[in-house]
Image 1 (cartoon, rainbow, N blue to C red):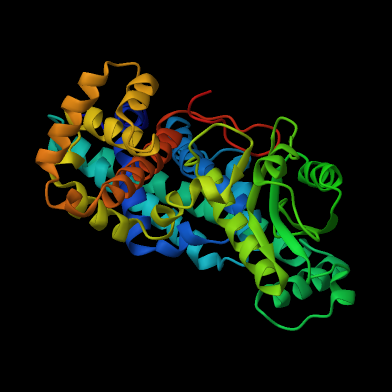
Image 2: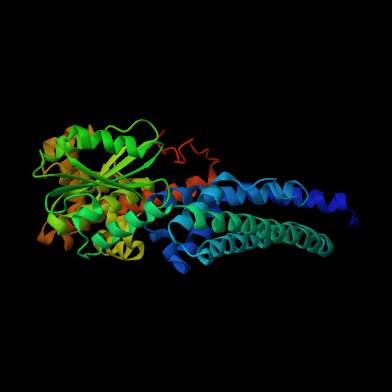
Length: 422
């Protein structure tokens, strides 16, 4: 049997073709590893980092496939999503070891699938050893190059991301958020009034926030956070109704804004900011219930639970929904009807109108839900409604991560990922 370089290369090309087909499986395996062994990666308090993270996995896989296809030659440049991930990790004070470990977990997932794939081929022992030995060498070469280049980006960004003045203001803001008595003069903002917490990111967050504050005729405190995100507070003696506050923010395409609820005084200053943070994390992970460029905490408060602790949310969902958490079409219809019914104030006629079905169909489906969840709805519909919302959020989060790795996604100029429904 020939062991020429051309023969080895033909086997590697066969392997990379098979791995491309199994990209989704590799992505899921990597995500499971990171979620279970490195949960801190998904809880970093930076919208930019979370957004960049969705492009990192497909970029790593793409670079690996390219290295195999080019006979072990690594790409000329580090893919831009990996540059962004490393830079945003440095700005968010994420230890480099966390990022480095995600590369190692991806390498492990690829190798597991490689062993499984090659074992299924009808090869001689010599050819099997040849393709495994060659591909292993290429994998190590690629991941060594990726981590070296990303590490250089991380170190450079860590030392330069904020000038002294910005660091000083951000430090004062962080102290105020932590409850320390930072003088208003040091912040340049009155903390005794009512506050609307705002976080903006993307192409031009500063303009979107400034325009919103001007429309509300409020005092503005804005500070560049880590990455391109901007933390801000709009202050007034009192605010108009929340719908008018929401309408004041009309970001240009490519810019995103997250809003907290209205808070009052020092405590409200901190609370509305943390709510805006939660809204921004949900939006960055594409879990918001709509495709708007403005996400508010009141509309995603429930979804934030799934974001904070997926494993506990899964336990709660399984406990409350039981058989209704199944993946079949009937269960999906019943969950959709249950959520629509609760969202409509338990009005079956309005539910039917919103779903575009007959009211008797709504009532029939609800009877089926009652049969399945008799114990859970004995005290009302609140827990099942909450469980369905969490179920939907967990499903969207899982599908977003996997699709980002399966499909070649081009980032926009502002660094954000296109929404799944675009």
